[in-house]
Image (cartoon, rainbow, N blue to C red; front, side):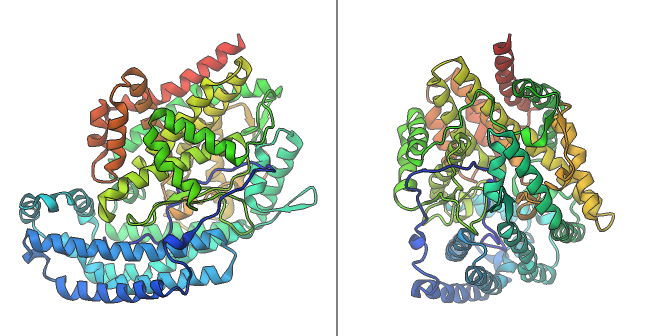
Length: 609
């Protein structure tokens, strides 16, 4: 609760899109629902209000929490929620504006200046979490039993209490709060470096997003050229990326050591409200399944491509029988919204204003942040979705994914600022489910076995990228943070850690070109949200299990699904999954999700016979 608003926007995805033309009228954000302009009088009004409200909150409540009754505690919570809302609105506007043009110096300055002001204004609130965790357990429990209205907030406070063993002194916590803006500078350096990279392919200068899309081109020579050019440019900038990772990993190690965290991952597990053993069970299940999943699939793909050995630029290559068709924006929109409506018309209704009211920014533009994300802003406004849409079928899936986040965020908004935010492990549920709905709808309309094969293969690749690749990323991060505890890491040290997980996860079908060892450099999650990546595998496994329940017992499923999304962060994963008869802490749970991927590969192998 000490940082009421995100220091950086939650970047839920960063998937490569694909190059295309004649995409139709691509929507752009209309940020006026937040503020009309950086110099809007409403923005200055809110900033002034925030400064005053934080000071008054501290004056009224510091050293007083233990003496509050339930009514007084509830009033305090509601005041804090209002502060969160105003601060979140300010930072959402500045952050979204920045991500539209990260190389624009004015936008970068506006974001930095606003972040500094918000940090200064909210420093008086640091006492809140610290003091809350000094309340005796019996008195804490009595507060929430005395008021049903207050009891609604208990899950949020329980998550705060989970940090109690790792809390530092009031003075140190204030110091760390103020120092946060310094750590944020390394994120901005990463973002601006990535956005400013230029790649030359066949005499044409391209930004990173368009270059990454070439790795999905039908023409193998284009894929190879893109891979070598990515390696060249990453290599030229590798010292900067190594410095960012070294600094952030060291900063985290110092924080974790002072707090007494048992592992580098523990902070993420706490924020995700998930037990370490559940994550390790997921990780172990996926690693054990590598031979049954990625190794087996890529051996199939190697044969389809007619290669003796695959190179890294073949990993996301389209199949030889796959058309190089460009999907226009209108078709993508109809495909996704029809799939949503086929599940439940309410989903399509919630998705509609994203397309019609400027809640999506779709086009690739110079300086725009790469990848895709959905940002919930604040509960009294609405989410915004960012894409880099270039017309490949996978871009349609990215739209389905991000729109799933958006629908989830709209539904959860009714919980209010403290409870709407979903732990990352559950945040991927609606997005991956949206992808699955879209995929199943498209699969049902396949006109022949050839088209079905292409669709199945594409889905398997997406699932491997979501499950296998992300768990390999997680292992890389674990190794990186562990190695950094032993001292400064050279670029070659980090490169070696990267390669140590690649062969294991991708399997014997691959050969690795010189330069591929630097491809860790552009993954934003390592910088923005350490250990975020396992949430993708968590979400995919969870959705596969959910979808199996939907297929087996469809009656009443939609209402239970909507209730789960509406719950936001108000329930633990056990409580959310109980109505479906699922339990993520069951060691066999993850095998259910992985078996769906295995079943798709079985079907692909059967088509070869």
